Amino acid sequence: MGRYTDNPAAVAALVQQHQVHRDTYIDDEIFDLEMKHLFRNVWVFVGHDSQTPNKGDYITTQIGDQPVIMTRHSDGEIYVLANRCPHKGTKIAIDRFGNTGKFFRCPYHAWSFKTNGCLLAVPLKKGYAETGFQNGEAQRGLRPMGAVRNYRGFVFARVADEGIGFDDYFGEALSSIDNMVDRAPEGRLQVAGPPLRYMHQCNWKMLVDNQTDTCHPMVAHESSAGTAVRLFEASNWPADKPKPMAMEIIAPFMSSYEFFEGMGIRTWPNGHGHTGVHHSIHSDYSQMAEYWDAMVAAYGADKAKATLDENRHNTVYFPNIMIKGPVQQLRNFIPLGANRTLVESHVYRLVGAPDYLLQRTAMYNRLINAPTSIVGHDDLEMYERAQEGLHSDGNEWINIQRLHDGDEDYDAVVVENGTTERQMRNQMHAWKKFITMSMQQPGPEAAE
Amino acid sequence: MTVTRDDIIDFIYAEARMLDEGRFTEWLGLWLPEGHYWMPLDYKQTDPDNVTSLLYEDDFMRRLRVERLNGERTFSQKPKSRCHHVIQRPFIDRFEAAAGDFETNTAMHYVETRLDEQFLLALTATHQLKLVDGKLRIANKRVELLNSDAAFGNIQLLP
Image 1: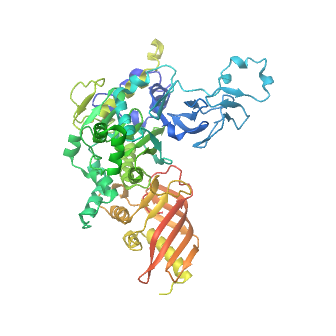
Image 2 (image 1 turned 45 degrees about the vertical axis):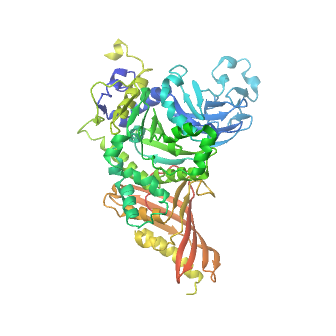
Image 3 (image 1 turned 60 degrees about the vertical axis):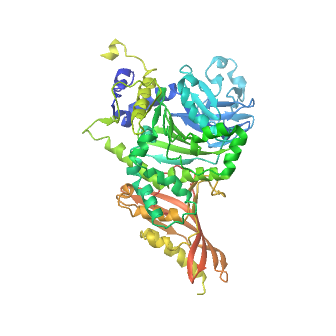
């Protein structure tokens, strides 16, 4: 036992209102507790149902450190199963996606399972006849997650059998997914190709924090966005020629502090929140008449306008995804270790919308989220410097105090100045709540 | 100018040397303005527009990338990265001297380093070259990484 295992009071003490202790970002024991408790108690994004459109389709991924298969069963429903043969532990599937037909078959001893995880057959089964196998763990097949919900195509799962319900967990925060899906004239999204995969030598929470960090773009991205603006201004671009799409995407990163202050931040209970309440860096994207007409035909002018006027920037769904409604993008910050995070960035087609929008979305992804992206280079440099710098004993605390005003109620929905760090405080408040809720209180002996 | 097969091969070698010596501004001058520098994300990807690529850069983006590398406040290039290409003799897959239109296929190993980190990529580069005003220029370049679907850290220079 280390300092934190079975000691929820010590874990809770790492999170104060205006600062969090560095161990939440660099300590291996804390990381293990995050995997064992936090990522089991909350609802974690698994995949999009358009990644498995047909019966027998599957993807492999992970929830925290738990390898899972998301699969489309013969009843048309999505199941999320432990990717582990109940016999010896062999992973049942290792390719990132595929179709398994009517059943999964373990490549080691040919145990087979229905696509809802139920054990289908074991070769030479008479060998288990008098062994009590029927009452044991192995007979249960590929274990399903505690709960699964497919919300408008986005599949989330809770590993723990008992815990907070989906609607209670997300509440009004689901309005950001609604807005992204409502932008499709046919009311659904379709994944467009494989995700970008970008390895970060830093803690997963640095990426989550950065999604609502509105005081870094004009500094950290001066090298990319600032240079873009300068190059464009020097280019004598003809006024009647459309701006390069790349400029439309990158230049707004150089917006002023005042712009980001006015943009607003909204926080919801359980660690969710978003930037871009009143406007955002996505507000001035050009729209094509063809798309507007398709939206009006599908929804009527009022609803189409309301949907497109919403320009939320980054919505964080605690613990570890961010979506951009106006860009049809989802980033998944997959924790691999205290100092190692895999970022997968997916883009989606608005079904029924012109290809032009998907092309902008794909461009956004490669300009901002790729390991070859100049904007990505700016960010990763900061994360990795911070991950190393946090080992300094000069100061053990990370400051999240900007626009902190006394006692904040994180169970309330509030809108504040867009440069507040309230959303980071909101996340860590939820972190403390969900990581400690299943930890054992120490008995009198352990406490001593 | 009459282009020989050796001229084509020398051009590919000279481009690799230019990148390895950090002469990026000079490298920009090799390009025709309408050309694209493409690095697909998916193995054997055919569509650069409607799915994500690692890179698909036009003239504006190439200039931005190089300007940024030279920039004063480019913190991810303090200190700077260096790169190194080891290339096989290019195949010349199209040689239409009269039309001034050529295509090569070149296997390379690419090494990039910064501080204590160094990584190796295996790749195949396809160049479409055109003869314009007596000079060979890059009309399009496609770089296929052998492991394009793997998770990478920063790739900051130009494989």
